[in-house]
Length: 92
Image (cartoon, rainbow, N blue to C red; front, side, top):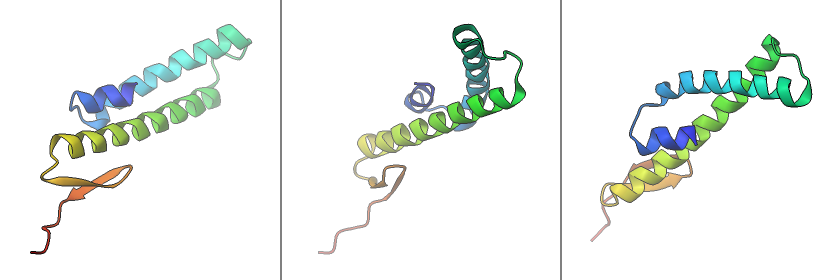
């Protein structure tokens, strides 16, 4: 949802980094509270945060691609799920 929110509001991807870091802290706490995991585990935090940031990046690119293609259909076409390209003029 964070990646989607960034894409929908036209914010740059780098603004998702602080959100991802905070979500990593929250995920670490939930692991501690629900599963009696270690709270202050640096490898656990880094792994949780890396997974969260990866999902954030994928969601951001998916929604930004959809947004560009739907909002500017005369300029762009979908290249694949994560990219768009300028439309090529059709031959006469």
